[in-house]
Picture 1: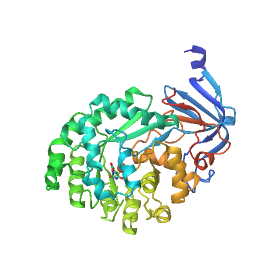
Picture 2: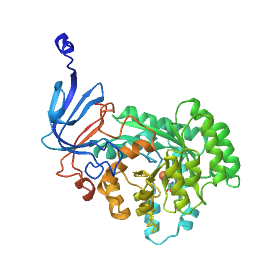
Picture 3: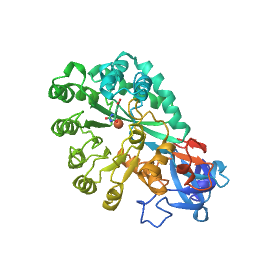
Picture 4: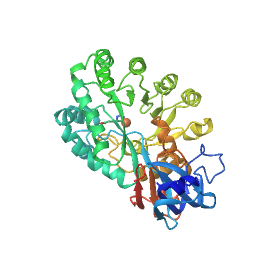
Length: 416
Ligand code: DI6
Ligand code: FE
């Protein structure tokens, strides 16, 4: 680097994006006085070095912009790279035939009896090699990436035995080497009861806590631990045992809570300092208060709400009033949300849940980062990773307003 530059305290940046309009998503949302909580800036500049944002703000205050590469954004909008904080991207097979049967009038029970449901995905996942799992997940990941996703969470939970859960997590980690994207992995062994343990849910939880999770943790394959706390899933008591095991391994927790009924899973998650509680259609006031107190993010999954034709809405107004941060995610899974679009997820968040434009954008950036415990991303601010989405839109609302249209102009991951 030039000695002259150093002598004058001028930094040589790798890349400068100028002529941009920025939705920095900085601050903490509504009440920060910055354009509906999106931190809107009309004449913005971003400068990055070594994959990190060094400056993001008005061009008027920008430092000397000495860069190896200067990109004129011609007035395009830049948001933080999008973050999908809840997916089941890795799985064998699909459930399109089951979908067809349901449209032809078959009930959920008939489908389960004919070998469908979550156990059919378990079988297909157990039968798949690690290479198969990576190969079948890549098109789904590519669809997310094509819309500006730079960080994607991926859960296990279709193996339901040690070998397959580990294979799923290895496949998930590999996605992050196959593509320029950050992958956060979550161990969801407590997703469903495998047939081997049909009458012994406690025994299965013991297997997960005493054998599977210790292996997963020793291999460094999970960034968090999740469970499905539900009548058709696991009880509060069983979930609590999973959380205790997670704590023993120093792993943060999240929870599928209050999706189909109210077992008070969200309050349990909050008591354990969970990063997020997810779904939440049946969440009550006590659960909201507990989440507000613990700073647990409410991750709403409008794709699942839509696909299963749920009618009970999550308590958005009460979450908002209590100051609970709201994230939005695809829940991409073969059974209840075969969705690989964060843009459509935002549209559903707005149309179905009445979230504002600012809330939808925060839900797939700042608050999604928080739901993953990642404090190094989710906003356009000095010191954050340089993960950007550059959009051909006139106003950010267009990202949410359109359905099935992708205005992504460019995507930058780690400054590239
Ligand atoms: N809640 C869901 O909606 C999915 N898992 C969960 O815990 C359903 C997964 C599937 O049907 O394959
Ligand atoms: Fe899920």
